[in-house]
Length: 182
Ligand code: IMP
Image: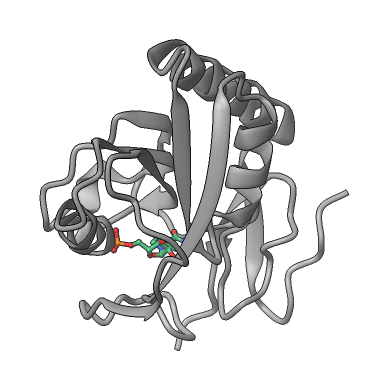
């Protein structure tokens, strides 16, 4: 069952849990084919990508290691400040590794554009991007994602790791969140 929305907030399912699970499995298989016989170093962008990453990794059939980064993004509301700041750096070097940056959603592209620039300076062997969701209409900075789960319309979504003011990350479906007028 879906968690109830609080106050006048309203949730409408956009992507059902079954469809998400199937697509994540396909993405993991694609990555495993592309990196057959090699090791892959997954970097999850906290906190939103944590659920996607933990499902993705369990379907991967290559040697995998993990690290995490955190950036400041939306803060408490649904509007981006446009500023990206690293709040947690990696634990180990990525030099010479096949790195896949795992993100929940590609929206304006500001976050991933910034992270790609930071990571490229650290000389990985390869650097790819896996994003569960992509809102192409919102793009400000160009970013090429190598693995995309779903392209979605320009709506604010929550669930499967995505939050609104730290809430709704635990929903198993991805839902469109409508907020009461301010
Ligand atoms: P970007 O830098 O605009 O591409 O945004 C990336 C980050 O913004 C994501 O990692 C999310 O944390 C957040 N974000 C963007 N769109 C949504 C949304 O629809 N729901 C929840 N968070 C979002």
